[in-house]
Image 1 (cartoon, rainbow, N blue to C red):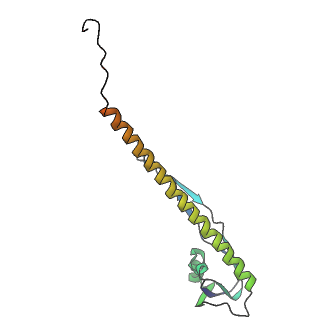
Image 2: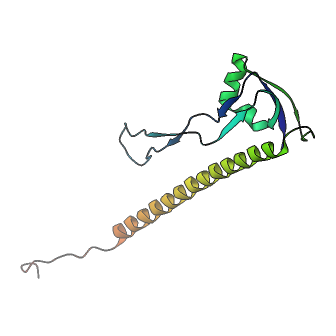
Image 3: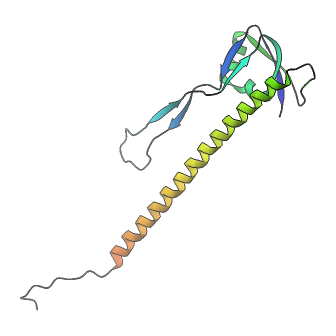
Length: 147
């Protein structure tokens, strides 16, 4: 994993930012079916006052970018190794949180893909049954006068 040095003028908690989940049903013909559900950030990283090492993904958080523009933090060079003078347990804890967040997002994406596949197979089955009904000969009911 890559790391970056972030220098902060004060201790600040940062998050990945407000995300959203698209709950729109594409099968509806209604024009006003656009539904969005907010997903509040679950990952909070504390940027300590001074110059400290963080996983490089923290520098990509929208809140960190905003703090950089405001002059509260500055992001320095990156490195592949953790220097001996850094707090290893703090960095590993942040990495663990980030990995669990990434795995949760991956599981959510996999679930969406699986739901889409199931929906697609259901639509195909429904089309097949409709075709079978159309091709089956229909029974005619004869009235007494026609017999």
